[in-house]
Amino acid sequence: MSLIVTGSIGIDTIHAPTGSAVEVPGGSCAYFATAAAIQAPVRIVAAVGGDWPEAHRALLTSVPGLCTLGLEHRPASRTFAWGGRYLPDMNARETLFTELGVLGEPGPRVPDAYRDSRFVFLANSHPTEQARLLDHFPDRAIAIVDTMDLWINIAHGELLGLLRRVDGVVLNDSEATQLTECRNAVSAGRAILGMGPRFAIIKKGEHGCLLIHADGVAALPAFPMEAERVIDPTGAGDSFAGGLMGHLARVGRTDLAAIREGLVRGTVTASFTIESFSLERLRQVRPAEFETRLTEFRRMAEVA
Image 1 (tube, rainbow, N blue to C red):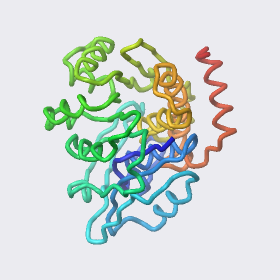
Image 2: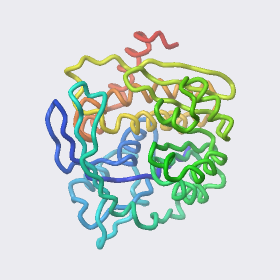
Image 3: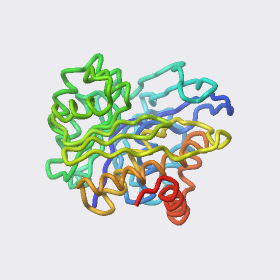
């Protein structure tokens, strides 16, 4: 089934206790698509500027199953860029700079060939832009939106309007509290369902995730990782979403059981991402390796 993601393609500069990576591939769309492609073909809709390195283009186009027809190149513009520094325990980071570049311009065009996409993920961007892109997929089977504290603060009304139109939302526990004013994650999830979606996925970092669905509740731990294997947490949340949506598109289902299995696969996908800077480890994952780690996680978490 056709899977599409819209969001940012960026140039990241990352400083962590494990080292630094300067001007490497990043962005929500890049992480999501590379992760989803492990399980299913994926289409991207995004824009980059004239400064986007050729090596970054070659990396994305080399990912099996990733279609870049919707990647718009704007020679006179600059690519979205972000820089951050992780604190010693890697559980928190500070933003050093953000350069919006093309993200401050009108959004990219959706190719006509993409309009039959049935599985739609609206990666993190302004809710107005997410709503515009959603309009292109009237025959979708499911649409899930990612959001963040910035939009909850400055585009609250637009975000609430968008939530009435989507099936699911992905956000972290602090953002869920900010959006609903509920400090309890389950209560926050229930409040989000009252805003329109039929499910909410609340990410809790190293403590896993929580699914609040109209048909039930599920909780899942994170994949246990030794400290020395955690190199760079950037993109883990986007990779988690890519693993989830890749599974849904692969099986062509959107019921509670399929979403729960998607959470398992998303968790395993994110565990690869954090083993390197940028997309390097994620793009090396092969199906057999993925299935081996999936089996290991099921055994550790006793997930049937």
